[in-house]
Image (cartoon, rainbow, N blue to C red; front, side):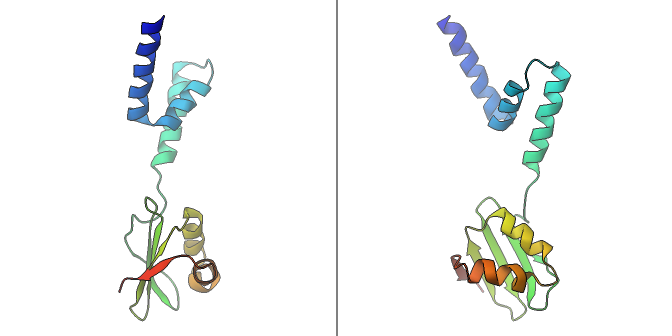
Length: 129
């Protein structure tokens, strides 16, 4: 019985490294469905995981009176804001929800989201340009 468990554990580790833990959990928790059902569930979860938030740190144009461009890198939780005066700031520890709110608040993202939720909330920042 012990060699069978070791073999199963190795296969689970291999699957985790290839498709991710959440996909494996979806497969394991999907019950006794058919293979097609399991594959469809795993593919659905994997596609949701690959949908990323932000711009991978690249600045994009923003519709605003005082913000020229902004970007967000979800992998390190850094939001970059470039103002019309040319100054550019990085804000650290910014959650994806805040970035989404900032983008949705155009044409007033700074006054509605940026200032109250970054500056007034004292989110750590650094002027980079």
